[in-house]
Length: 148
Image (cartoon, rainbow, N blue to C red; front, side, top):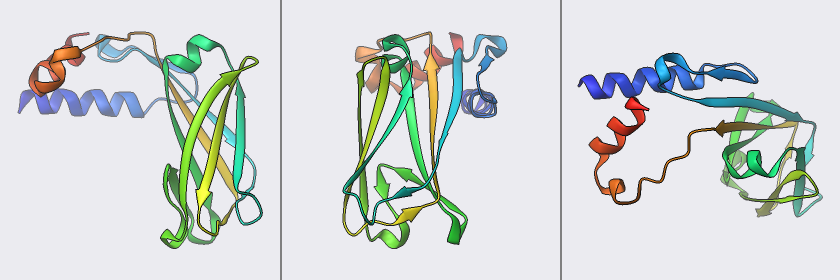
C-alpha cells in the first residue's frame, strides 16, 4: 500500500507541472515538460497533417510526446493515436527528426473531422534507465522509479 501511495504522489507531482517547469521534488522525478499549441486541423480535406517543432536530436530522442486534438462542439480533447469524434475516424501518429525539427505525422483511416486546435505535450527525461529483465517484476520497477 505504501508503494502505491508513493507512486500516486510521484504521478501527481509529475503531471502538475507547468510549461518548461523543472520537476525534481525529493528526487522522485526528473523531467522537463513543455506544451506546444497549433491551430485548426481539418482532416475532412486532408489525408494527413504535419505538425513540426524545432528542437534538438537529444530532446526528440529522450522525450515522451503526447498529441491531442480539440473538438470544440463537445468541448473535448481526443488523444492521438486513437479514435476521433463519434469513433468514425481512426488517427495514427508517427514522427521523425529532420533539419532540427521533430515532425509529427497524423494520418487517418476514415472520413476525418475538423478540430479547432491541436496540442503536443513533451516530457523530456534526463534520467533514462534500461530496465531489461526488471520488466517482469513490477515491484522492482516501482522501487527503482521511487528511489531514483
